[in-house]
Length: 436
Ligand SMILES: Cc1ncc(COP(=O)(O)O)c(C=O)c1O
Image (cartoon, rainbow, N blue to C red; front, top):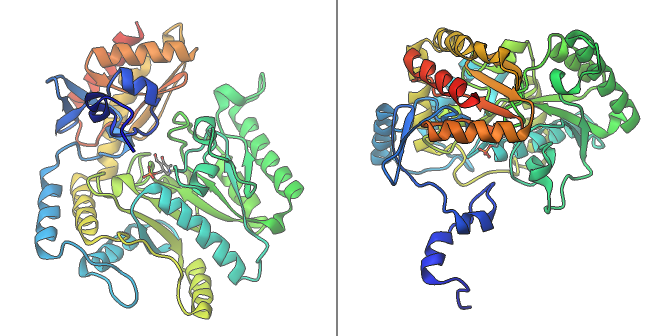
């Protein structure tokens, strides 16, 4: 085959970029980021930007964290690769399991590893079905997911995602996905409906859907404690308590997708602690390694682990594994990341930075084109009245040297934890100035 593009154009377009219009990329090449320093990145033309979303809500310790580089290097020099299949593992993966297990909330205590959030979601779904079958419920295979959810770009994980642009053209969503409403009060509440009444209605609708679809066909529900890529949707009071009560009553397992919320983002170590969620499974990635190495985990309770172990024993093994799952370099980086979180006093630091962020964005509540300013922990969103306003504000902020994540009408803010209070003030000042 001969290349259909001119060699120069081919060089520019050799990479098919994710979540990008390829035709736009041909005309406007993506900005190349060449270096990082704390919360700042520099592009190939020497422009410096604050990345106020920590990349993809993940680079919690900044864009060139020295200690993580040293941890990775030391592990690479000692044992750069080994796996955890068939009677082997690595010392550092075993150590991470011990340390992370001790940090997990509630009844979560066992871990299975992958390489990213999408594969963690795929595995959590497989394990939920496996555990249901082990309990004699072979017919429980379907999964409840919400509109506005982002659960990844795999096959099932993309199907569970409740965003149209992730489904278009891919033969998704799958029939095994049952869709329910998202807890987005400003956009979805009925006129005059209080936040509490809205939460109660969503919970009642969830139960109606379960009864209509047949509880005996449903393995699990998946949900992000706070929906991230769907616009930083903070659930109203009573929502998660109501959801959990309904799921328990119908024998449906709960997967908390903490790929963004895990490791401090909502104020507690885990979003489940912030909202009193007691899941059967939890997916973790991103801030597990400060995004410096691709590593993910599915945490599970002792109870489901026992069911899974029994069933796998019946087959002779757990028929699942990824070459790089629980990679020793990732495990070493994760251990160092967790040590840094402990040393910084993660929850206190998030509280301090989060309050500063909330105070800095508060003036926007009076802005004529702002519908809502919301925050929890150290993540926030400013929702404008139209997507066009959102896009314009994001572009003006970028011109002023700050990247926000533009999601329809909303601009998301999710800075690295290594931001100083002054950095947070600068981020807020740019948002306010860009809003005009
Ligand atoms: C809540 C959630 N789950 C899953 C994923 C998918 O993770 P990854 O991109 O590492 O596959 C993401 C990514 O943003 C996410 O936000």
